[in-house]
Length: 101
Length: 470
Image 1: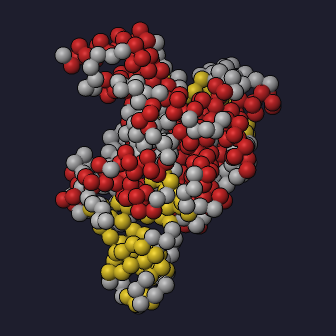
Image 2: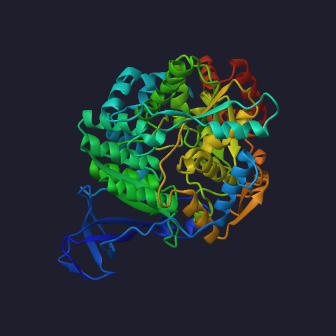
Image 3: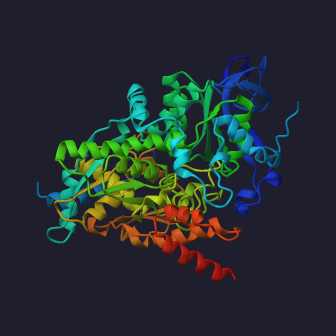
């Protein structure tokens, strides 16, 4: 459960598929234009999935479905890609010569 | 008062929203026919180059170092004919506060917004520009809202864009994230209307004139250190502001270097396609922006774009995704500099172009960008593999965007491939004369400037295009 002033992330469809502009590829046209934004919860309390209002960092009021409380960043450097080490070896060999050292 | 927020109503109010959000009346530059007063618009910012340099120094922007890449030069010479292989240099734009040249564009816009009394700035960008605006807004004491195209319809974000959102938030900005689609501009217009903030458009005269300092610095840095100007300056090209501003600055420094545009070749991928969005490993500096913006600069978020790259480019080359990743790794492993991949687009091209030039000549890749989780060769390649893209060694000429990424099996396979500039110039003219009646002398002069061609060439091209349509 989230309570007032918790830092949360919400989601809302800005345009439904039928409302989208004409100059789009079919795959994009067949899905809604979705939006995510973070802010401090304005409702006294809310559960994930509830319709809520938040105050964003610029002070705007935004509404949408509550997705996450205390949203975190999950980006990282990804899985190891062996080709990168291979590029490194090939480049060093091309410039400095063999691997005998 | 209830405001109609439907797509049609909001985009219908665009001219008024933009005028309110920038304090610029674009109508005053229109001639009534196809010509418009580009130089008049650029001069009307109220800031001279000297003013902009002073503002940028105040807010810690610019004056970035230039480094000679001796090992990459040596490698290029091994691939080149005897006597060939120009000295390769890079301008380390990553050392701007938010990590890219984009801060030059942001600095003047934010300064101007504050001077006009706006309480905040808004920018529609998925790129480094967001962090640049956020950084300058933080430094200059304005609020900042960044609108990003970030996710596909499954909610999967491009790692590079997710990282930029994190950085914007770290610098105090609000980040509004959207799924794929050009309606990003509709959302941005609503935000401008709701907040009354300044539109820190990438394409305003304030933004593009901010990049002039980059070209100006290059001219002066080389004169001071080497007693001569560079022969070729390579600029990554997407929306065209980087090349336009740099070229204008080079001219102001009386530097006659050839200006080469470089974009990552993403031919075959549709930029507004939901299903193809995460099939690409570069979210900027690619042909999906570079070609349409060069041939139709005014389809941006301002009525008249200050970024008009065909006026300034001497050549337009493309490189493949595998080649830019390869040169990014080369910059790390041979030069000890770890930088973001997209910022190395011009370096990949410079490595190939240096091999056409004499050993005593100088070629400059005019930017680097910061790197970090998401915005780095490792997560980008891991993400590509996860999305079914094959990673191969071979001849990058055979790379197919969205299907594979081919790293050069040997360094000499990295090539800069020329695009047909005259074809792009014809395309620009075709768009501009569409629906226009007979052209006056000013229109012909304008098109000659727009295409960097003679008036005779323009007259001949217009006649041919009209013949085709007759």
